[in-house]
Image (tube, rainbow, N blue to C red):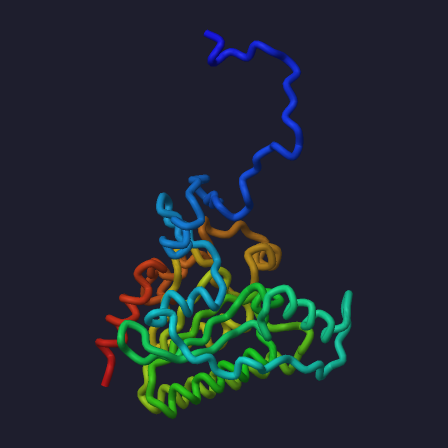
Length: 281
């Protein structure tokens, strides 16, 4: 039965004849370890078809998922950070921004756009964790404020997709001021009677959680998202007690009344359209 039994030993395949699987063809779920093709993973909106784990996606992918035919008009796309504090840690702040721009193709940690979603006009601001951990600096606050202004002036619903490690330390007080600025703009949006939906994704923490992320007319989240102000380790060290199981997960936050509902990303566009359709004036 030589067809399945090796008869010769020491067979070596030359390097140039070896076959390797190209990177990026397969996806392995970090939760349940299910392996599928990347094409299938993209088809499922980067959600595991077996366990429902939601992979982190960037702002551009959210735009493709939400806007009809992936068509939208971006707002303030060229806005970039200055260096008001002449800040330096392991490298100068301008150098950090420039290298991050080069690596990600982004100008800052949020992108804003408007277009049609399920046949209805919508303004979307989507944070991108790839840019310095989605940290909130002056550009992030200004772009969100201008997107809110656009929504108010054109009477279009506003969706904020938050994913952030919090305020950007390189801008210190300038960063913290964005909490007040965005909150004030949202108050004007509320006075105008225009719906604001806040979608919290993994992770949403720090000053972002303490400001615009929790001020929605509807606060919703993706399954399993980490939502909180300080991190679990900091809280545990502060209070000196073990934290409840699942503490700061979207499910825990929903159970304690801080969210309206949790939505699977594959259903987000239609659920959002249904929600806005009910409150449309």
